[in-house]
Length: 254
Image 1 (spheres, one colour):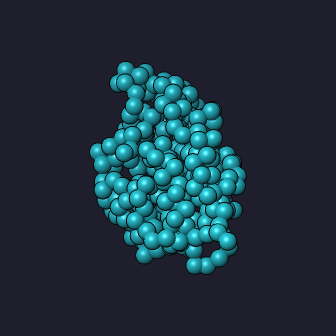
Image 2 (tube, helix red, strand yellow):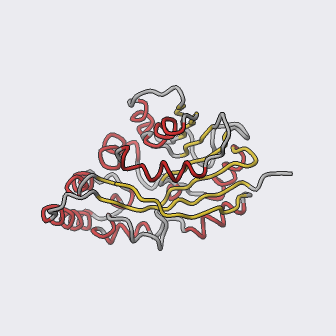
Image 3 (tube, rainbow, N blue to C red):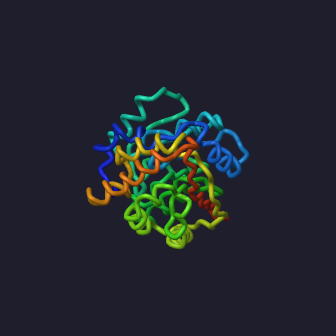
């Protein structure tokens, strides 16, 4: 079960969480460094949401992408975007991925592992659906590594929620038990909003797991802080955040 109702949140999700193509340049470069150098290449986007990354992956690397998303509302939003024959959108979740064994080369999980109740089961499923030398790329905000995320400067309660997400150590242990080895952990920069004023508009939509978990009073207090900062911002500089990319490689089989 997800921590939030994404069917209910789907219509406003892109307005609150979508990132413009230029803002994702750091992720394009980071992902590209880890993709196997072979063709054809098939990527699983697990927890694909409204499709921001599945369509980007197909466009960036000219690869086939299977986007698995449990929320019908989120899949509907993804289908409303420009169609791409390289992308297949299907229902499913991390504990029961609706794909055959060895059908994908790479798995991409973006800000989703905190919604997966049984991470160990998900890791085993990923080991099943990936080829023997498959790669897992996890984009996440890990506890203890949250200082470079601007939202948490204004919403300390949201940071407390994020501190309950799976840690790097917990994630590494779950994937090691499933037959993966940790390859790397790196910080990746993104432009989350073109300005603090625009970030304020997005925050008002409250389409974020950590914001939804706050009381209305906590949310109102944090929003007031963002609005105050936006009014005082004379630079119009973009809002830059840094999230983690945790990379695993399957051990393979003899």
